[in-house]
Length: 108
Image (cartoon, rainbow, N blue to C red; front, side):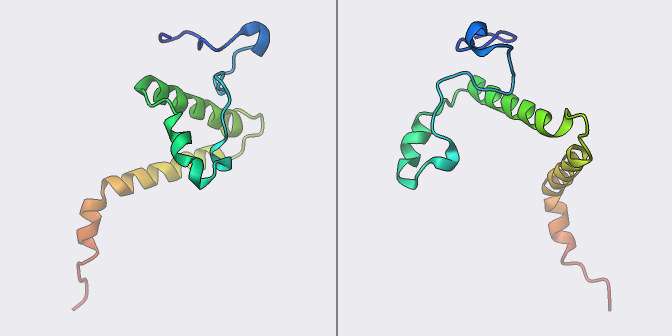
């Protein structure tokens, strides 16, 4: 599968219009339904290639868009999630500087 092509599992006659947020491969047990003893086998069945990881991230992006950004009355959830995610990212990025700042004494 190259860039910009449909997945090989997709069949227009069976699946209808292509949805980038849907996985067209063989369905497997959902992560929430996996028992602790079956976790190793479940992880072994995952595709760990970089292309598969990029495809999973793309599906997650489209699912997020369909749920929060694309509805007609979307509200403020999507912008607030982006703002909070940016705040967390920059806090983690600057934690080395902020860690030393907590030890400063501003009073005598």
